[in-house]
Length: 140
Image (cartoon, rainbow, N blue to C red; front, side):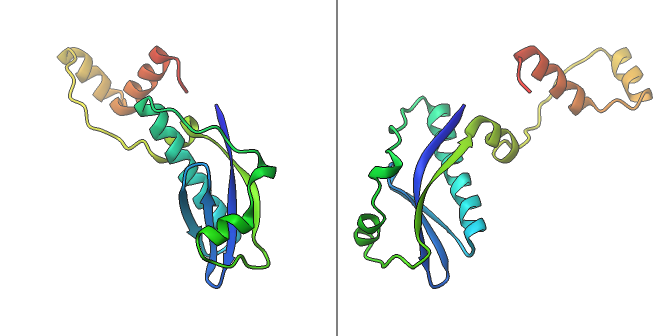
């Protein structure tokens, strides 16, 4: 599911600060592209954590209702000439699969004859288990 929230990109001397007014959270990047990548990562983390924990998310503000000047004033900074407000979107579940989900070690038992046959065939046990679990759970 795609989540879309407005973000303020404030140009500063050393790059961009990115503020999500709906969450009261910020990140930054040295370039506009890096700042956008960091904004996507932050938004994905916020949404994924809320979904995982069963917490509710704030309703996204309308883009037109977010004031760049008000956000800059609240932070007591001056917005640079290239500051702007834009929408940031992310599919948090998909992003989490790629970026947040670390591997965990599992111990399992299989019959010795099956183990021997699989080893002879050069089977990658981790890949087979992952594929079987994905199929069983109906996820990609």
